[in-house]
Length: 478
Image (cartoon, rainbow, N blue to C red; front, side):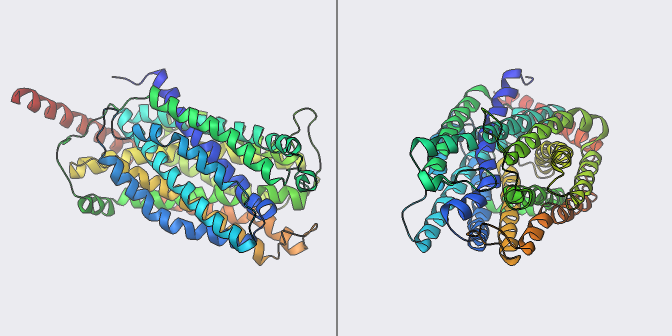
């Protein structure tokens, strides 16, 4: 049965929800922890990295659990329903500022951020794995992956459109007074404003996860559905899957490219551009407009992903997009605070390339799941897709940690009204040359990826034949 428009929209809703929170973490969390919550950039960076040590175990563990789940709703869909509300509640707790000393606040940040990533894993790994069982056809998966990324960027766009005005609104509503003072980004520092604004976003996310659960279906059944395999065997099979290793490395570099740029965007506007401007009525700052045009460009890149990759191949177009993104990022270093139009133009071009790459990564993981099933006669979709979630979170973790450490190393002082020239230089570097290096590493890794379009099509045909033969044997046995 072919996928329907309902499937595509429903599947998109899932990543729309995930992305609304994920972009808050990627774009705003380092800013929140240093400017609102009150911990140093170095402490925040170290926390981002250390909490990922558990995450590195948690993601594959969740993949193994999901692969072995049996319910009337399937293996992966139930988690969208079960964790929708916890996802929202823990997210709100992460952006709550308790009345504690700096050590107590840091401990609270460790606990809530770790819990947030665990809940994110519990819903996002099964959600990502759902792509591998909604359709057996590579081109349909490209379409589903494009819908996923398109809706993800729509979710990010909504977050950027609403978050800063919501923070400002609730800061005024709660009478935050001096605590609501904003810096050059124009973003309020009111702790209560941040908590209430994230609560609104969290409620929307929970509703979207429930809609994703209701509108999607699992259709692909493994060739050997009733055969039991040990976790050790699944891990051994994965360790021998060379395309998986290559895609993990290249994908990690691509995500690191985004993470470094995203983590310092607000600092770039606050401390380098210093443009205190807000749109009338909407109240958007220059930094918010920068984020919004980036998300709109991301959506254009996603829209191009399926038609171009289906025509020219995923590998070639992935490498071209990342090469262009790296080259354009270098140009950021040459821009001055007066060249706001050029800053926005480069943001659009880079974001088109980044938006194009992400759906290709998810579609390639589905291809790798097919490749492993053909070799081992065992489909471990959840375990393979958990690695994609793990690489995503590790990319963001290393990017955020590196950003925090570099800010500290370049002499950034979160309490100072004006930053030293060394800190400004570091911020500019992190928006240009450092992500460019990550982009080139992503291209180099993809050069070794062995699953061509021809081979992916052959694998799909061979698996289809095996499933048909398995069905015939079961029918004859009845």
